[in-house]
Amino acid sequence: MKFIATILFSFMATVILAHGNPTKNSVVIKGFVNEITLGESLTGVKVSVVGSDIYTYTDRDGFFELTANSDSEIKIQFALVSFEPRVVNVPASNTDELIEVTLLEK
Image 1 (tube, rainbow, N blue to C red):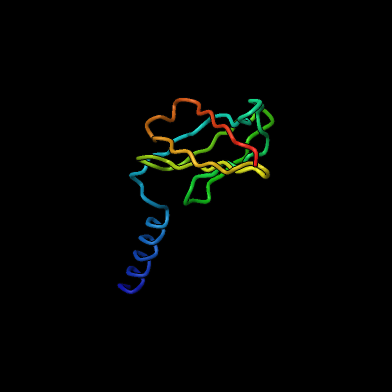
Image 2 (cartoon, rainbow, N blue to C red):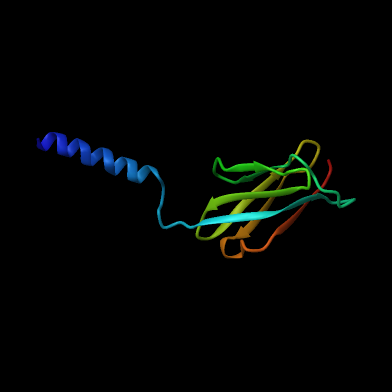
């Protein structure tokens, strides 16, 4: 019986730890991506959290929204074919505001 209890406890501990650090906050990051020269919105830009598998794409208006887990600064990468990729640092405390990012054509 002790053996089964030990196995069950080990399994539960593994499941709890696998869900990450529960002290980190979920923050929503929203904004727009535009082309730097003409200011036109860019559709299909990959917007990703650096160091994670969290990503989304901009819509036809250049708008994006994603949720990340962090208590501090979040690094967001913007990438689109024929444009220079760009990384922007977003403070976790500053996520109520829309961010505006411009990309430069290669």
